[in-house]
Length: 531
Image (cartoon, rainbow, N blue to C red; front, side, top):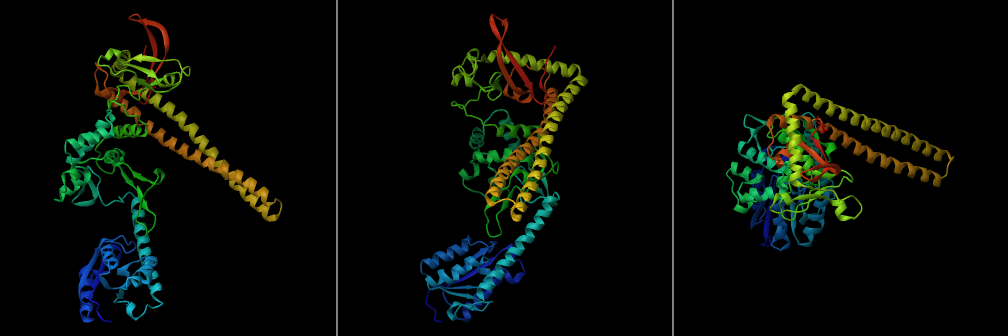
């Protein structure tokens, strides 16, 4: 065939799934393609290279550049070492060879497979393409099996250490704390559990020009990017850090997966598919702080219009209707700040208008916390026993009820399977007609779906119960942290208080003012009555 003067595209591709020795390296492919082109009068040669890209996808920079030149009409011939270098997706390969290339008048040559479209395409080419795809599928299956086995046995399934850690140079499977990044991780958690929102945290880090995680990683290899890319913290980056259980010292495997060896789209796995191995490396934050952050992340938090969060925001509830109480006035004078029941405010008559001044709350909360501190420090054994009794008692009762219901549902699901099998056999024997079979089977299908939904919620409840066991430890740590409380701050509330309920007037008066009932629920132990 006469050379047209158009470009001769010499296409090379190599990736880990093709690693069969030096014969498939980019340098070797270039040598083969150049030699072939020179010996066959193919001039105006240009290389298009994809190094480290799988053949199962055609989203490759080198290939797309070649395709643009083909569509622009400047490529006359495409030469590859063999069909597998071109691609391992037989449907896409067939589409390019049979539709796209002929439409643009492009000649296609695969040297090792003796394919030359100028001499006609062999009927065996589709089978060759299928074999190439099967090879990719087999490699993918083997790699998945290795990763699955490693992940199930406690090995890490990720090649990169998360922000805050670095790989041990002497053992790449181990993580060491990256002190520079760890300081930022600790700061993010500390700011968040003390009431600073995710958006505000990202603004602070950006304003202080703290390198974001990807920029921090590049700095260690000497790579720089523009100032905006280096220092701009997106709120999602902060949220991702707060969600990372690895900072407690745990290995978390199988966070993501891919739909198939052909699709490179990443899909996030549900929690039940995660494999978690605790205490595999040095922790950056305590488990108690992490659990508190997760609780806060799970709570819907309405951002105040002023951008300032009230002291008792998301701690205060109406005892009667259990709705949240919000601050009424943000005046400069603290005496004028008060909280009200949101349901009573929205719908007249739905709930009595419970309201309470912030200064009153501060006095009572400070008084109760100091009583707890006095009790804990004067009678440590009694305090430890109270922690254990209150925590163990409520958890055992809740666990027993939840597990009993789970067993009931499992038994009922087994019954339904038996009934449906019986229905099917009765239909086969002609004992019931098709309409009756459909009616009963649909009824059982609906019941089974509802029970499975309830079962998922119960398993989630069990997980939450497990988390409660660590809350008493939070309170024990807080008691050791303080001698006395002289001011109620967001940090004090975080360390001691689960939530507070405000109720009716008690009939008492203090400083000529009526006194409302206030119930304080401490972290992990609930309400405590001091003599």
